[in-house]
Amino acid sequence: MADQPLTSRGAATYQRILDVATEEFAEHGIAGARIERIVSAARTNKAQLYAYFGSKEGLFDALFFGSLERITNVVPLDINSAPLDADDLADWAVRLYDEYLRRPDLIRLATWSRLERRPGGHLVAEQDRRDAHKLRAITDGQAAGLVRQGDPFDLMAMVIAMSMAWSPVSNVYAATAQEPDDAHERRRVLLRDSVRRAMAAG
Image (cartoon, rainbow, N blue to C red; front, top):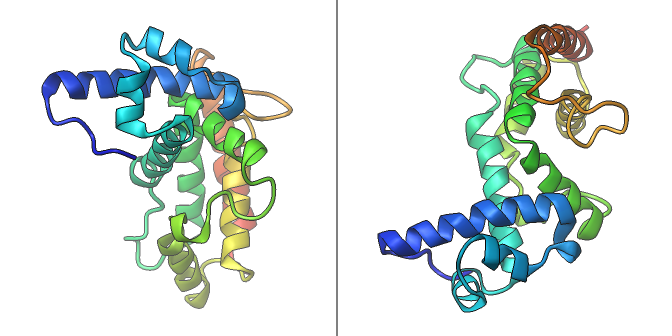
């Protein structure tokens, strides 16, 4: 991907492209997204888009890895509790639930990447994974007898899956931010209790 623009005008154009492209890819996927629609809605042109991102794939990469960074930074697994326990994992699951409500487009990008790029194995290549600190925290919690035994990656994957029970890609029910607060709170309570029980040692 090309360097980000340095001028304020260029930065504004760059951000408009990202905002519009997020909606386009979230709705249509990688193959279905159209550069023509993106540049039209972003009030720019193909030459400018390609100068910033190189290609449609490069644009999707910028969005996709940006979404992974957001999930990592906005909804981190609290590794400062010493050591991590089942309650920490339960709280993390609830924070993920809330982030899916705020930014449903982020999880849709991940789903398109799964469908169109990596149908099996890890969602991203080994060098692009961002879960090492989470796995260490789970391992430390296991060593302290606070988290159930098992492959740390499998435990992390289960917590994430439980947090996605009502996500935009659920095949049962997709929650939205427009629903009543009591509905979300009911799910948070159930999710927190379920993850705590599933992850507790013993």
